[in-house]
Amino acid sequence: MRIMRTTVAIDDHLLAQARDQARRSGVSLGAVIEDALRMQFARVAPDSAPEIPVFAGTGVHPGVDLTSNRALRDLLDEGTELDQRR
Image (cartoon, rainbow, N blue to C red; front, side, top):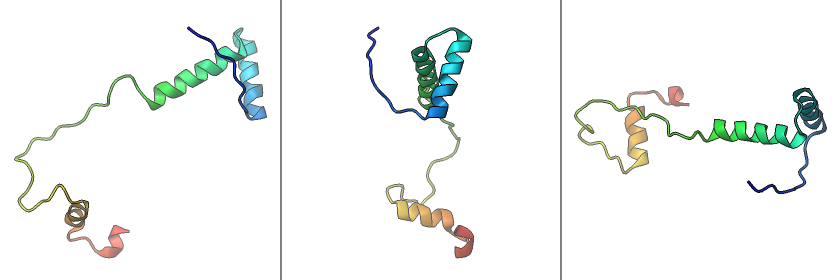
């Protein structure tokens, strides 16, 4: 593992909290910041892709144009009053 030194601007209150956490845990400030970044990245970009639901059916209904966003939007809004769509 390669370690690189850098300078970042951190809110004073967050920095104080990170230093307190490091002191309580007996680790370096850098370790606390690395752990926080790892947790953030794991939450945002999980290692595995989300499960995509699959629905049974006979396919697209006649007259539905999947290549037109406008046509799909109009179809989904069909029968809905304009005020209810807002």
